[in-house]
Length: 178
Image (cartoon, rainbow, N blue to C red):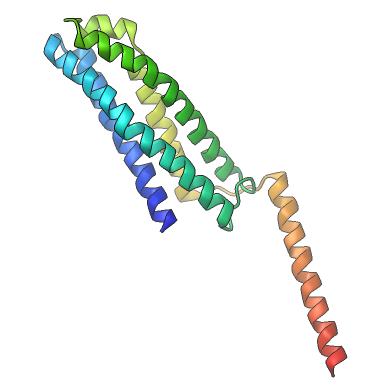
């Protein structure tokens, strides 16, 4: 069930970023002041009520899954890469939402043009970078490239050593019982 929630949150996050990107393009490219206003107000609402909840849900469910599955949190490079992507994207999003809120307030109280906004906002590069980062994370989830961290290799060796020891102990108990 947790895996399903994680997938839904991650896919929802990607979808929300695509919607955000569409609003940013519409807001920056339109000469219509009402469209610009609407786009930036919608971006502000989308960021606060969709992007942030999905990013945090994806982070929390991903952390939980990595701790309680065979993949481990720090065992495989792909899991570590996804964790870093998620943390960085969430941090940038949380920082960006603050400036987006003030930009949306400015747009709501004026007739600013899309061209003026383009010079004063970085919504497009943020959106494009976020989409690329999330697509890379999705790729890593599906293909799970090989490669274990040194920590993962050490833990795997300890587990193997433990199972060899358990077999030897079982065999010794069986011999002693006969």
